[in-house]
Image (cartoon, rainbow, N blue to C red; front, side):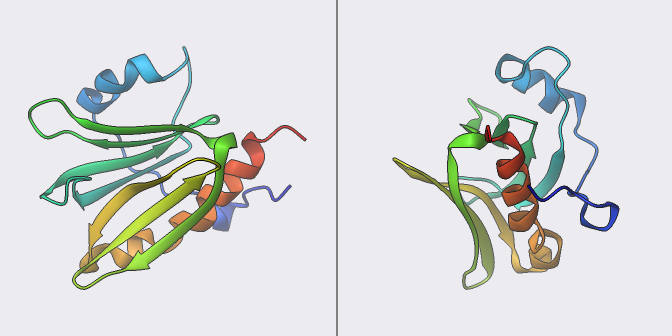
Length: 132
């Protein structure tokens, strides 16, 4: 199992309290975010803040949009692959489980550098979440 070194540590941005409250029902008591990175495009493709978050056991993509937020919630242990794709004017991070694929982050080209290490970090967290 590949452990995270200090130089490989996942992106950690401060998660607003309003986002934390919106996700309380998806998290176990005392569970903390191991990865937290904000985006400038929501899962619906509209400009606005969105979050890609991971705990010890789950991956959560969250796009608050003023109505019912878009949420993707997957157990890390179920994820089989993670990939980043550059599109025209934007980028996406996609994950695949045994039964489905999901887009978990959409971001403008200006943020590609910020997201470039995220797939590797997610792969490490996925390995740590799987029973040996």
